[in-house]
Length: 109
Length: 117
Image 1 (spheres, chains in turn cyan, orange):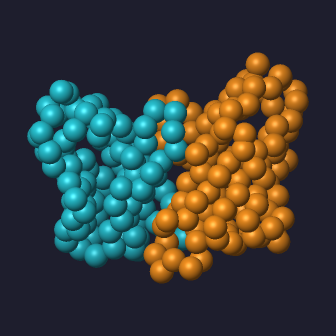
Image 2 (spheres, one colour):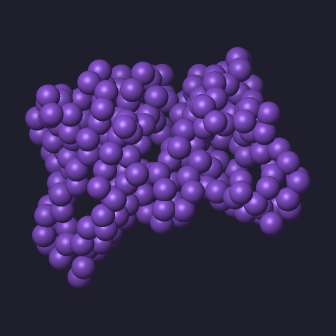
């Protein structure tokens, strides 16, 4: 079983809609969780980090963490074409990052 | 946030030659840096953890004699791909942690696209 799993997509949403991205992880001892956005040919850039159960909001982005169910999700409100990218979920396990395979998101104008 | 640079951004080399990639933390001292490799349409795979002043820790399946890592200073780590082959063509990305951070975020460099012909 992989440490971090994501639905690879592709996920397509119309402009202005809410995009929902999900991630599950295997290690119950994980303490920190991250969502990165990666444009084609570029390195990842941090979107959100979350450490506690519940929701964390930053602008149009909301990260949700449920440690009991071992999942973390990212909601993007009012999706824009510029949000089209691959979104990587990362989990810190034993001082190392483990990445999911990424979900490809396309926002259709 | 902290800034990490990589050089070169893109390199093409012939099969059998060696290539060195530099990773620098520009505004902080990084005792630990990480090297990742990413093949097309795949996720980042950790290759090794680079520790200043000591030997790197390689992930299972990564040949330490082929991918030489040197972390000689608190702001510089280098990855040398020795005797490169076409299958080594990939996107190599380094990252670093800022020890001043209270969180364990990793700051990524812009990546190096290696093409071996």
